[in-house]
Length: 317
Image 1: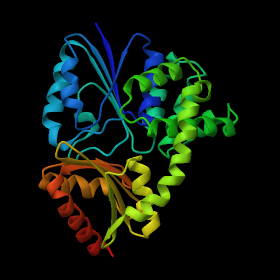
Image 2: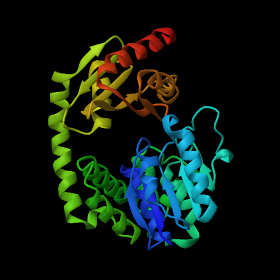
Image 3: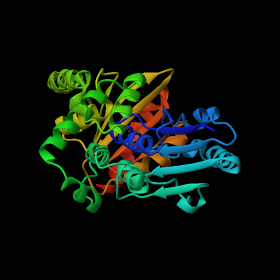
Image 4: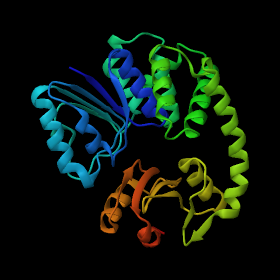
C-alpha cells in the first residue's frame, strides 16, 4: 500500500505537504493543481491512501473527481484538506473520505490541526510558514503557535521560502527536497540554495516592478500583463497597484491556453464566484479565494474574459 500526498506547489501547499509528510514519513509527494488533479490521481492503486492538500475542486472535473474519490475510498483511504471555496451546490459532507474544509484558515493550519498528535514541535513552524505565505496567519491557532517562537525569525524564514519558491515554479525536485526538509523540522534558512534563490528573487522583484509599469495594459477597471517572466501572483498585484485598477491579471501562454492569476484589494469583489461563473462559458475554468484567484481560458478568449470582468465591475461601481 502506498501513501500519496497530492499538494499545491506554492508556499501554503509545500508547507501543508510537509506537515502531512511528517505524519506519514513513507509517503510519496506529488505536486498538482486543480486542473490536473483528476488525471494525476490515475497513479493511485487499490488500497492506497491519498492525502490531498490545498487543491481546489474544479467545476470542469467535479463529477469525475467525486467518482474517483469514491473509487479510492472503496479499497483505501482518502483525506481532503482545503480552504478554497467549494463549487456552488457542493457541501463538504458530499465529498467522499475524510474531508476537512475551512475558509478561515490556511491549508497548512488545517493539515497541522489534523495531524498534530503525530508531528513534533519543530513541524509547527511549517504550519506557520504556510499560513503566512497565504496571508492567513491571523487565526487563533497560528497566533498560539507563534508564541512558541521568535516571530521575527519565523517571518524571515517565511520570506526566504516564498521568494525562493516563486522563482522555481516547476522545479518539483527542489520542492520535494524542501518538503522533506520542512518535514524534518529544518527551517528554510538552513538550506543555502533556498537562501540564494530568495535573494536573487528579491533583487529580480525590484527590477520587475519597473518593467511591469512599462508593459501593463489597462482596459476599463482591469489591468493585465501577459507572458512576463516573473511570479504570476506578484505580477498581478503590481499590475493592479501601479495602475490603480480594481483587478490585476498576470497570465502566461501555454499550449494555446492562458493560465493566469488575478488579484484585487476590494473586499466587495469575490473573484472566486465571478470566475467560477464566467470561465466555463469561455471554455476554461477558474476560482480560488475572494481576493486572489486563478483561471485558465483558451488564448483567443482572453480578451472576452477581460470584457466580462469589466461588465461585472460596471454593475458593482
